[in-house]
Image 1 (cartoon, rainbow, N blue to C red):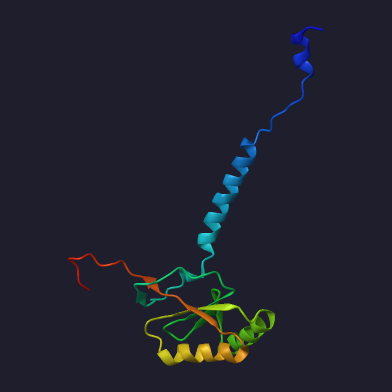
Image 2 (cartoon, one colour):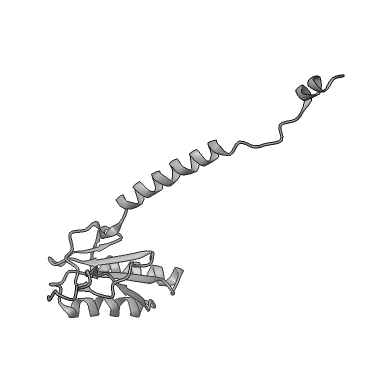
Length: 143
């Protein structure tokens, strides 16, 4: 048997990972596109501005108080009664749940405090507030 005949019987020793990488990249693009569609912050709310604004951490409850008095939870309209029931349900599942609160600038401060009181009565005590980021001033600018 010659050495040229011996090459035909060799096993495949390498794995081609290019198709795997292609599939992973396509899935990544799909997730990136759908994630921007599913954001609850796409509601028409005029949030107050803050220089130290941070991105909100993912939370099961995003509560938004609109200027006209409507309330949304994770992008769905809700009444005060439904919101209170949802707070109790979530506190029963995980009392360490964070609630991200967004309120229009024109919403009265007392309404936000009332919402926080309802959540605390249910047993929830972690809150974050949505604000718009503000571009830092240059030395020659004033607000």
